[in-house]
Image (cartoon, rainbow, N blue to C red; front, side):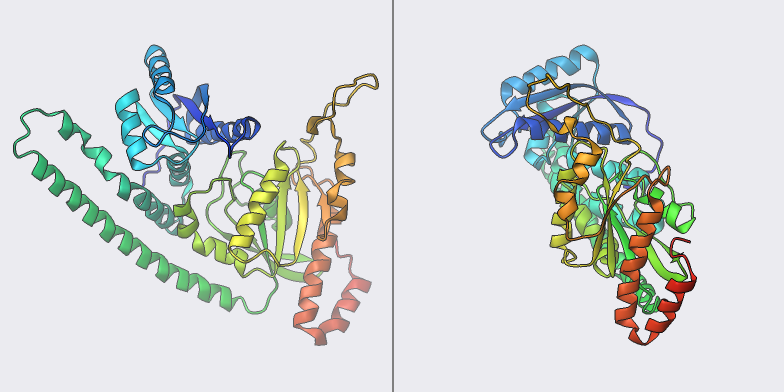
Length: 406
């Protein structure tokens, strides 16, 4: 099921809908993200199709006229893949493949494909394979549409159904096997977490591609894989970090994303356990991304869902080296927009009133790095003292004798 092959770039078109729940500006953001996902998976997006609907069509997600428009375009330009921004039901997927006659992917399938490419360890591959099978199971009937095209089907319908049921049983058995395998690994990882003793644990959390792995490398002086693509890191990495003679464990976790497939949330439960069991969360945000506030909201929502939202946290606004804005001329009377706000102005907004320690850095150039390290040191020290109050005098000594920024 799981393949980890190099993808040749293929041309694709994107499709999304504007609804009462999803306005046009929000759809544009989602489509930009979908294009980045497609590029990460190995596709070149040549066109976007959007349609305004009260709600997605139950049969084909988009209207019949729009489906015909997409079909005409992909036939004329030799496009082999159409990617939809939302998860399609099994019947919608089947109807669209019949209507447009090319490969149809939805957002979930695309993310699963990226995870399949990125999975390096046996554990990550097992997690992704489970998610793929869970996605595939209700969509098995698509694989048997060739039977419908055969005339004189005496004896064909029975074997077809039998084959589908056989495949379903095989997949259900495989899902059960993978779940048991993950349970075993989860128990081992839980034991490993317990064996770490009472050392303070901090976890890097944030939206995908915000620079968590780059920050991990800079803090721990390690070599965790980092790349400017979505989901560059799937496997949880734990490193020992020492700031000012104060040791703690730092965990790099998989990035979050809007519309994260439910199959992946379940499969990556152990990764989320690292967040749940951390003493301190370091929430990394890409300040240069125009939708960074939405990213913060998405991460906070997931933290709330896994009951990790009340933990001590540091807000780290990364990539200030990439931040840019358009300064308005004095005689420009058009309303201000987000693109006209400078970094200094952002710092004076809600960020200055945040209940969490907040710092603006560049993990790449290490700008304001010492300030961030001091913040982490202070927060880890608070947790350590609450856990080992009899060691207070030792840390008073460390603070007097040692620069915490070392």
